[in-house]
Length: 416
Ligand code: PLP
Image 1 (spheres, rainbow, N blue to C red):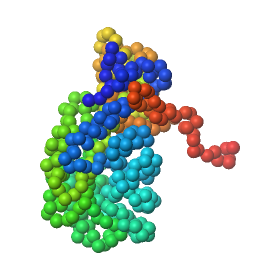
Image 2 (image 1 turned 90 degrees about the vertical axis):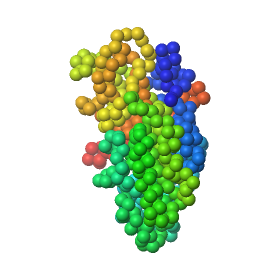
Image 3 (image 1 turned 30 degrees about the horizontal axis):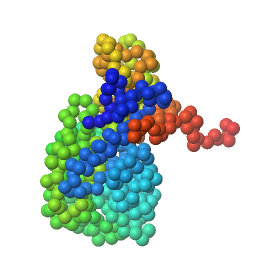
Image 4 (image 1 turned 135 degrees about the horizontal axis):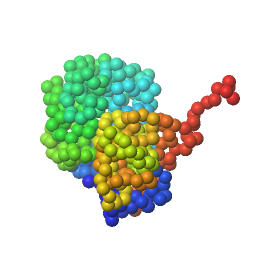
């Protein structure tokens, strides 16, 4: 459920018609519903409340300060994957003891900074990384907490690029190596080995892969009689973009809770998409309609793969709604952007009521892995981000300007 729907034939965000917003703000822009964001956070929190987990919002899905602040205010921690995310997390006011840090490639500097800031723990992805954290900790005379990220070799039915829990993927540590690490914990005396982590991928719409992966980890804990303080079961809860069968937070929780409740460890979950995905849309304008696409016509819009890359990168399906619903004959369109790549599209062969130039379209479900994956490709400034909160539209990030495109560049003296 989300708060973007037609009212009097106009897509509204909560109660604000998008036509009011397009009058004031140039397209393209991302638009979020505060109410939807909070509602989805609470749905997860309430569904898992029997295990009283720390919910670390996966800020890679949306790292806007206001989005993070809104969730932190609700009690969320943050799952980070870089020094940049640590910086933003702290700027957003996240208590360090609610920050967990994954990533297969943490640099020495990133590790040092996170140790100095006293984050809750690192999710360690390899033995060499553990050695690095241990050595930085020794130098700093600190004893940070770490959790080993296990690779349970469980396949999730999702796009290969966002599958992370199978053998051969770069993520996590196999059970045998993890056991060796626990057996030789005294070799890593500058860290406190306090937890386990598992995250098998993103946009997983079935409960079975979660159950399979978490069962393997819990069995591992029992068989090797290790003591852990934290079990972090990652994120990955899928949402409805198109035809997927919706799983509610309660359905995910009902399947997972029996495995993790009443255990001698605390639970962490790291959802990103489930909280942010359907709380945002990308609004763009049709520039031209051109005949001759393979599937019908081209609707050429002012948002491209630099603004929103999921369709180009993963062939992801996103529903697209004309902001004003008009009565016209349906036609098939390739909705394409202005970027000089044939892979620059938002939808292919999609049937809509006939669209015309200057008409606005809302690309649905773009609140997660939307703005954060945008770029300046083709020297296009990144779009603004807006949020409807308490019935008002607020800008939470301005659109970039042309000057932003060369910010940071230095002209060599030879060219001055
Ligand atoms: N945790 C880790 C370690 C991740 O890599 C990701 C994303 O891939 C997430 C959590 C969040 O995943 P999702 O947005 O699907 O919930």
